[in-house]
Image (cartoon, rainbow, N blue to C red):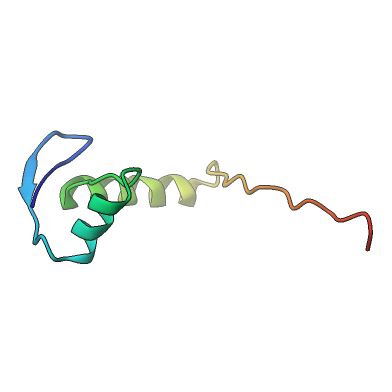
Length: 67
């Protein structure tokens, strides 16, 4: 299966029967990133997280007023 990286527009071939290929075929919201871009983004995220300026915003849980 031919896939295209969303960041650098390189075209790669992956096995058509792999779980990644199945995920990309069946769920159109999933995107493909080549291994180079994936590691680059992961490293940059870890560096930002280490500085202390990186915040993850989680959804606030709704409290049930009946209990």
